[in-house]
Length: 173
Image 1: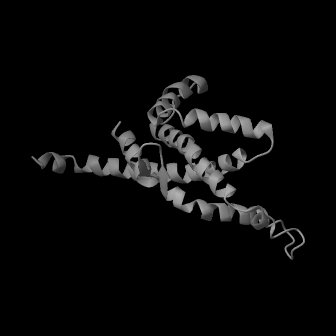
Image 2 (image 1 turned 180 degrees about the horizontal axis):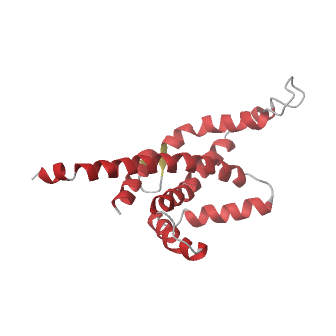
Image 3 (image 1 turned 180 degrees about the vertical axis):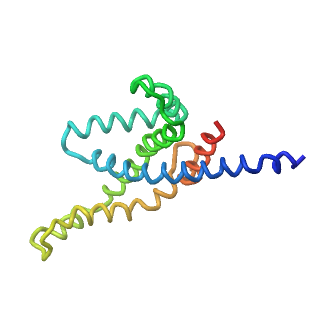
């Protein structure tokens, strides 16, 4: 009964390796793009705020598999050439996860008091503006529990296993 696993062990380990790579790229890219999305959602400029808000609201209301299908089947039509399936999956995950990470980062930034943001003011001893970097660091620290545990409506799940599980489905496809 277990001889099937033994015969296909190489394929299983190859799928596991693809899952690890896809999870690593998707999480790192999703977090980096999510920070930008979170900062854009805090912008006072309507030409930044409204398109990013539409992007977040649109992508948070569709399933990940639909984003993957759209990117894999529609982008080659738009670009005129085929896209590598792994690259397509990575970009789809980054685009999808950035919406969630962006909202987490935005919420973490909004927990910082205005006094804390204004504390290292230009009148301090620093020659370069330090307060934007300190604010980003502080919001990262405030949002850290939410980065790890992302709560959704009916159930709660962790971001890392959810991304890992979704990427293993992609490696199976």
